[in-house]
Image (cartoon, rainbow, N blue to C red; front, top):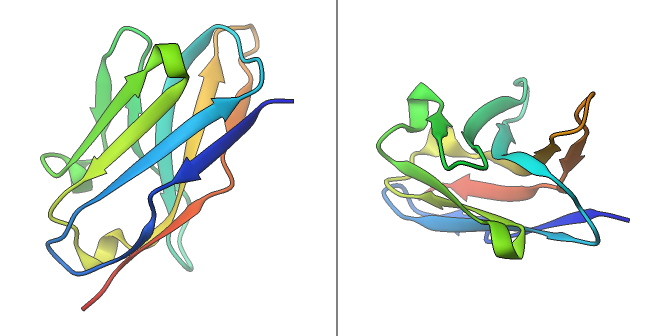
Length: 118
């Protein structure tokens, strides 16, 4: 049974920083991409950032230059460093792992709340 366990969310003031982590427990093979998504109240879930097994990254325009995604393949862990946080970054952040099988399988974390408020 594979589980993705997130940590690092919380309450932070505008301009502050948080670092999210997501680690996989259990046997998970041939991971391709690792990513972070977020969903704010009343809005659809959106991609925040994704990183491939080769280290290529892609970011939502709204977070470019402020957020950095990284991964540790040996630990099956993905990180999201969030700097210069804004109130509009407030959302539930969920991690996603996708494997290389055909069709690919997605694994999701339970979500962690990030609230940016003074």
